[in-house]
Structures are given as C-alpha cells and as structure tokens.
Image (cartoon, rainbow, N blue to C red; front, side, top):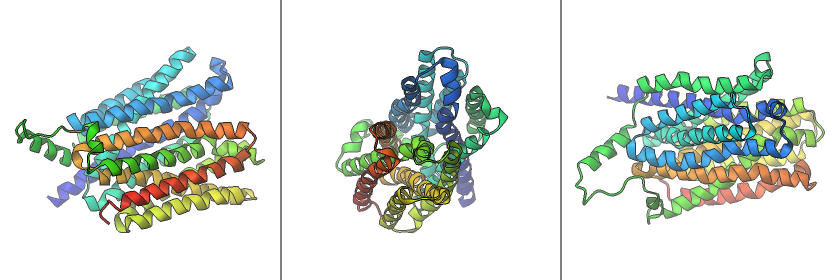
Length: 403
C-alpha cells in the first residue's frame, strides 16, 4: 500500500512539475518575444505594455474559476482542460495578424494557465501526507524558474531569434504532456474520499462543496484574509523583479547583456531556493521558515541597493531570486496546508487570483517610479514595505497552522 502511495505521489509531482516548467517558459516568453512583436505589429511602448498585461490579466478569471470547478468535478479533468486551452491559444499567438487578436489570445492563454496553477498546487499537496506538503509543492513549483531559465538560454540561440518560435515551443510542449496526464496522472485520493463521503451523505446533510462563501466561515475567515494579503504583496515584488530586473541593471549603468545574465542567475538560484524552502516548511516550525524567507528577501533587496560591482550585483540577484521565488512556492504550499480538502482548490485559486492583482500592479508601479525619476534604488526601496507587510500577515497565519 505504501509503495503504491509513493508511486502515486512521484507521478503526480513529476507531471505537475512539467506543467510548472511550461508556466516558467510562458512567464519569460512575453519579454523575450517583445522586440520581435513590437517590430512586426508596429507597436509603441504603451501598446507593448498592454500586451504584457493581457496575459497576466487572463490569469485572474482562470485562477478564480479553475480551483472552484476542480473542487466540484475533480482535479485531473480541469487540469487537462486548462492545459489544452493554454496550449491552443499559445499557438494562436504565433498566427494572429492584428494587435487586438494578439491581446485576445494572450488573455485566453493566461486564463488556461491561471486555472492550472491552483490545481497543480492542490494535486501536489494531496498526493503526499500532510507532513510532506511543503516539500511536494516546492519540488513541483521549482519547475517555474527551471522553465524560465531554459527559455532564457534558448533566447540566445538562432532558434530563439524568431519570436514566433518561442510561442510554438510554449504551445507544443503542453500538447505533448496532455497524453501523459490522461494516461498516467492519478486523481487526488483526498478528493475521491471527499466525493465518496458526500455521495454517502443525504442531500439534507450534505454541505456545499468548494463554495466561495466557505472561505469566510468562522474556521477559514482569518486564514483567507492573511493568505490574500501575503499573496498580494509578495507577488507584487515577485513580478517587479521578473519584469524589471534587466532594466534596473541598465538604469544602474550596466549593459543589457549584464541584466540578462543577472536574470539567469536569479532563476537558477530560485530553483534551488524553492526546493530548500519547501523542505524546510515540513521540517522546521512554520514561523522560522517565514522569518528566514522574508529576511532573505530583505537582505537581497538591500544588497541590490548597496552593490557596486557587477559581481556583487549578480550575487544580490541570485540572493533575491532564491528567496522571492522560493517564498512564492512556500505561500502556495501554505494554501494547501491551511485549507481543508473540500475548499482547498477554491482557497488556493482565489488566493492566487488576489496575488495576480498584485502581480499586475507591481510592474506598473515600478514603471511609474522610474518615469518619475526615482531610479532603480527607488523601485527596490518601494518593494521593502511590501515584504514587511507580507511577513507580518504570514506570521499571524502560522499561529493557526499546526507546527
């Protein structure tokens, strides 16, 4: 029985890891393809900004709806459908011939990806024992920086020079993974148990499953509020770094190539940090993990502000990457830990959607600060209060989580 459970967990986390790799490819795709898209479509800077926002905006309805439907009809079905939607509209990105159709397909691709993420977190959480959930989500989510780093390397090759190839790759990879999901991915055992229990309960006794209002009942209200605040401000900083790190380097007098190299170090260290912080979430007291990861982010931000040489900047970028992306993975793991099975997908999905609002606002606020003349130091300094607020609310949350 234990051997079967281990196989179930390994297969689930491995397939979820592959989907997370594809998400990482997509996160980098827009930035890497931006120059080619701007030239082919004749876009100005404002239109290019709208193009960036379209994919992130699509994540919102996807995250809101995907988790809730998964709580009702099953994790596996919704994950396969959302991955198919993402694959289809990512391919369409390379085929459209107008700016408005470009925005539409990026929005719809984002919706598919947004629906997939809370399900990946839920499946990874439910494939293992409660004592191993942080590790499982960390191993799954480290696929995101792996995918982003891979695409950064591909962008330096002749294949990556054509922006359409980036979206062909991002669309075809999930199409290859979908048959593996259909054949090999097991449905969540916790979901099946909950469904069986509901089937054996009379209609009069049965409680509604996966309802938004259940996130605000007496048991979940404080958890939901803390998760929302932490997701919002942490993802705001995550996406400031993802979107603006290379540009911040040029603001400080370094070259674009230096900025791209820093982004690569950022992603490689993010992979390591996500795994280690996920493992520590299961082994340490939760409060210690929170202090470590938010302390690490603050140290990295201060290092970026104070670094002088290029080597110091690379080291600071790696430090921020290890903790800021790792922190996001830990937050997703906490969503899987604090919510009960019947609303886990809904809770993580809505929390992710709130986080995506921060993800949209962060890069826009950073752009406004740069335009107002605050420079790279102003952007980095503005991120510091966000991290402090997130840390406070996560420490409030862990008081309600078994240590």
